[in-house]
Structures are given as structure tokens and as C-alpha cells.
Image (cartoon, rainbow, N blue to C red; front, side):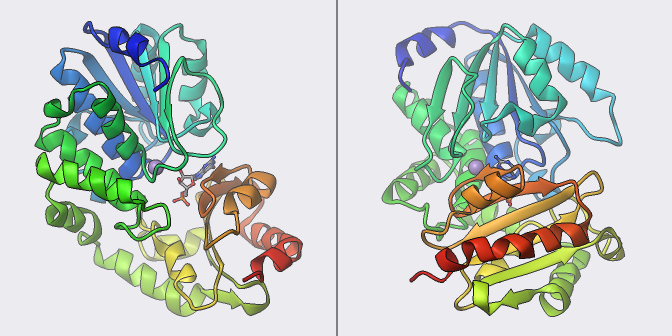
Length: 340
Ligand code: 5GP
Ligand code: MN
């Protein structure tokens, strides 16, 4: 962090702190939030974690989960509570996202407050709205950036098993269990430090990866056998899921997570796309290999972004129309997709 000394003095006395993360938080978003919350609570801060939506069941085991204020369509009551917490906050941490538009109504509340804002994130092209930034797009995870910030503060000894567990969960998932091309030597160093402070790799992997419902596995089977389409001329694989299909398998938040990676596991495929109907909009997930930037594609055509090889976006068109749009723009990228 550039202004580390000022940041040190900012957090040197107990304050009212709010931590927010992105819509439909993943393990990095939630793990970073709960890890940082546990760390700040140790020095006497009053900390609230707010998520702009619900999140998957396979994340609810995380220590501190019971304290999270999750907004949802079904239960709008916490919104007033969130507004009050944000209005009273002295410091607001924004984790694992870099654009206030990604947190829905919370974004406007945060824009209006005079609280000091701190951004900790690893996505490309951040909006600049924070006075303090721990931002590094080369870092595989926000959880790793929180570890590095704690290290910069010289407070590594404060990391206990709770903090280490939350941070390790984010690091593990954002590196695809240490196999995506964002996994540097540094990620292993951080993982090693977290394990030495009490994170248990096996337990965390089990809680996240081996707690499937039968319905979720059946949905995966259905997508792989019926919905996965490969377009060899574009080295692209795509899958769509309608509301009816999701309902048929009783899909819950998070059940589609990871599906897109199966597309990318096909030999020769350079880009995989998952499109599914989230009712309010069509959600798109993009993954790519090598130099092909799905961040650019998602930003240009689907109001999204993320990382070079993993991005998301949305579309207000119908599912069919969204697919047609994707098929229409593919020729623009044909040459790039067929390089190397
Ligand atoms: P996923 O496909 O798993 O939802 O997201 C892949 C990556 O892109 C994640 O790092 C996620 O935070 C980011 N991402 C997903 N949706 C959006 C979006 O709408 N806008 C931006 N800027 N990033 C997104
Ligand atoms: Mn992340």
C-alpha cells in the first residue's frame, strides 16, 4: 500500500468499520471479508460484513458467516440496516470488486458517505473511489492481498486459525486449487504461511468442493451431456441454462459455479462461456486460455469485466438473444482465438 503509514494510523484506534464485497460473493469475496473482519475485530474495531446478495451454501461454514448481513430480493429488511451501518461507518473496506456498480444499491450508499474508503482488489481497471488501495491485478486473490497487507503492517503474528482459514479458502478457489495461470510462487508462499498459521487445506477443500447436493451433480451431468456445444472454428465451447432447466434441477445459488471450466477442459478449446437466466438478467461467465482476453470481450459486449482469463458479464436480452449476440460477435475474435 502506497500510504501505509497513514493507513496504519487510520486503523490504530477502534472504529466503526463496514466491509462490503461483490454481488453473489464467491469464496475469495467472502473469505477475504470474514478474514479481514476477524483481523480487525482483534484490535477492537466494530466490524460489520455486508454482502449485496445471498451466496452459496458451500460457503456458509466459514467462521463468522453467522454475522454477515446478506441482502436479498426475498428478504429486503436488511437493506435499511445496511444503510444505517454504512451511514455510521468511519471506514469502509471494499473487497474483491473495483466498481461500485457491482454492488447494486450499496454502491450509491457508499458513494454518498464521507467514510474513508479502502479498496482491496485484484481485478483489472479499477474505478478510483478509495483513499487507500491494496490493488494488484497480478495477485491471484484478494485474500492474498489481505495477507500481504497484514504482513506490510508487520502484524502477521495476529493471524490465527480463523483468519488463516478464511484467507486460504479465497486463495485456493481463485487459483482453481493452485492450477490457474495466476498461480505464482507467491501464492504458494502465502498458502504456506496460512497453513502454518492454522489453515487446514484438506478440511477447507472438502467444505468447498465435496459438499455437493445430488441435484447439483445431476445438473452438472445434464449440462455436460445435453447443453455443452463446441464450435471448433472459434475454439469456443458454450452452455446455456434457462430458468426452466435450472428449476427442474432445483438449482440453488452457486450450483452453476465451476460449470464453465468444463468447457475449457476440452482439448483445443480456448474460450468457454456459460450463460444462464438469473431472472433479472442473463448472467455470463467467460474463461479463456493464454493471451485471449475475456476481460476485453466481456467489457466491450456484456457490461462486464474481471481478469484476462476469467470474467463475467450480463445481458438484458433473452437467453436466446444473448446466445445469438455471442454467436454474432465471435467472428470478430476468430483470428485471435485461432492464434497459437
Ligand atoms: P464468474 O464468471 O466466476 O462470475 O466471474 C469471473 C471473474 O469475473 C471474477 O473475478 C468476478 O469477480 C469477475 N466478474 C464477474 N462478473 C463481473 C461483472 O459483471 N463485472 C466485472 N467487472 N467483473 C465481473
Ligand atoms: Mn477474487
